[in-house]
Length: 118
Image (cartoon, rainbow, N blue to C red):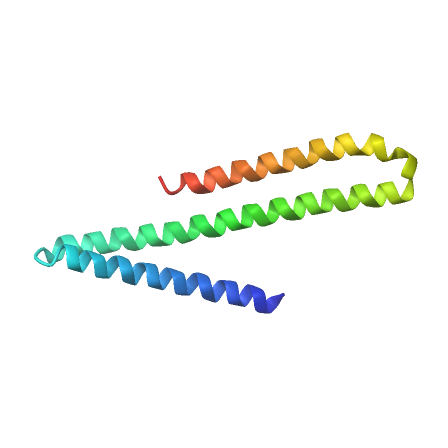
């Protein structure tokens, strides 16, 4: 688990550096005659690149959290059904309602994350 986390962190840092380098290179090419404007645009694009990385990480965490939440709901429901099989029909509807609430919270988090791009 630690190796996956380390790999994800390295990929995020590499993507951030690549995004900043690409933004800087594009600004220099676009504004070759105006050095001050190119520097200001490079800083703006660097911030924008880091914001995009933040949005991607936030959206990923929202989806992972939603998946873990729904997995826990399903696990608890199946455990309850295994203990008391005659109550399976009574547990199904509340499980679906709670899973829908978790999905709603996940979609809200995704929308908030993607709103950061505007």
